[in-house]
Image (cartoon, rainbow, N blue to C red; front, side):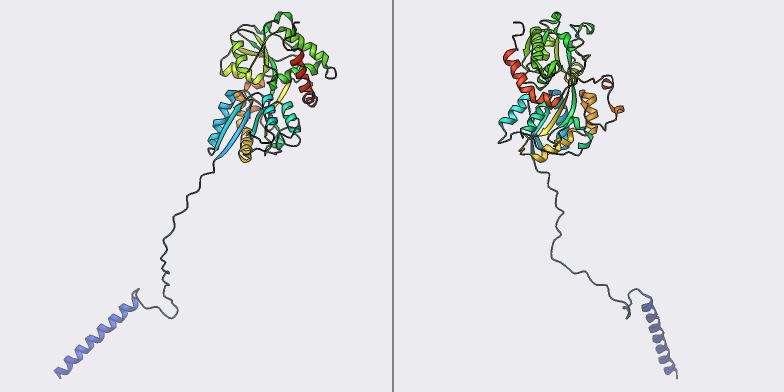
Length: 377
């Protein structure tokens, strides 16, 4: 009996242990999946090594060749800003007179060497457009520039307005003693005191002289020729370029000249030259100084980028403040423009610019051959 009870106790102990183990297994996370559960699929193995992300390619190098009639101060201010925004564009700038740019564009018509014409008179640009020297390009700001200041076929746009005024050495000549209007320049008291920038190479001077002929009588240029002959009699000499003009006036080799308002202000305020201006009482030729892409430009994309950059409204306000430029864009608030500009009354001479552009070459050729240096004779 004792032997049977011992065996029975061992059997009961074993049964109890088995029940405990079954309960533990049922509560654990390692239970086998039920009929409604599916084992998690193992991710397929691959022998390929993940490729590193590709490094973006830097922008391709581009070139931009600019012919400009702009003052060196203007070029030095703008080109570095453009390069900063477009580091992939290599810019080459060649400086010359506006008329020289026109002549060079003519000579290179079959194989353009420049991409962008930066700084040209309205007359020169109209002539270039009519001769097929400029590309048609409608920039994003096209509707912000009045029709009067741009080409109807988008071949050039006016960048700024340049009133042509009387320039004088403010150290050598008091303002009250300076000429007040164009005809005052013919007074005998100014004989030998006038120095003029060489006319034929300068778009500015060609415009001023053509305007003097037009204001006398465009239909009869003889009256204008007589006026220019009297001016020539009072003219001491013709300076070969703007730098030479500034040097001679600063040295008081002469005290008067005719020049554009912007460059006078640059010399006065930035270069601290003893120069100032008189805005002629009867009005001034307000030259539209513009830009265009050269026909057949080899670097068209870079030229378009420079075009858009030049007319950026923020840049225009900055250039009005720092470089005395008068913008053509009409969407720039007058409140943002500098004080010096608010004080200038831009009274224009009544001129027909189409007639001026058409007649300029003949008028200037006659002046060069028959008047220059002969006025006193």
